[in-house]
Length: 93
Ligand code: SF4
Ligand code: SF4
Image (tube, rainbow, N blue to C red):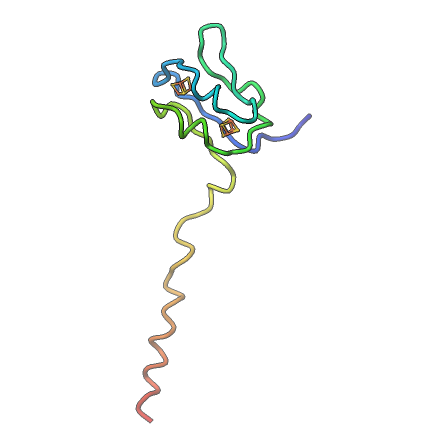
């Protein structure tokens, strides 16, 4: 019951033209359209984070943020990896 959403689905209503493409392409049946045709996350717990809805939306009106996408940037390269330059000083002998 108290399970947290694995993936966060955000729909920008002002950009959405209610075409229903995202609903049609979602393979997990997460999305549905309300009476006005606007999409909403009917079953957010079923979202796999596949990004199909976001990729297919012609108006960039839907985004899905997954926990894996929130990794901090800049961790691959940093000042700590410049140790090689120190070894060159020992070449004289
Ligand atoms: S990310 Fe995939 S599973 Fe989740 S709502 Fe979009 S299409 Fe459906
Ligand atoms: S595909 Fe995009 S524009 Fe179409 S209903 Fe979904 S969010 Fe709205």
